[in-house]
Length: 180
Image (tube, rainbow, N blue to C red):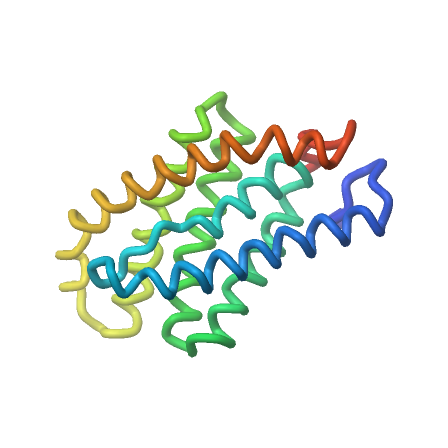
């Protein structure tokens, strides 16, 4: 089975430009959030860079969104080290799976999908912390992360609801088809 990364009807240059833009925005937001994360309790972030992955799922296709998810984790690995890279990979893959399933399988709102993805991201990161530290005591932090994830998910859902129509207009008639 061949996995198609470029949606049908999109020129290769338009696809590359849009995916490059999504990755650049994702990396910039990730870096910006790392500056502001010092003001938040340990392990908490807003997750605005995940808006880029949600846009890729909605505007391009699921394989391209997975590629973007892996590139985001690679960026974290390169800029913040192995532990942060593993935490990012586990959280991002969990959030990606939930987002892809909900956007493709339900009519859930942007906010509901975003909150669910944020909760999945936190669970994925807790599992990574469990692997790294070798103790299940990290799950004691779950209630605090759940509350912050819900708040962050609401915020990213609002951002997605605002940005998505503009992305569709920028992409033209093929946007929002989603592909695979």
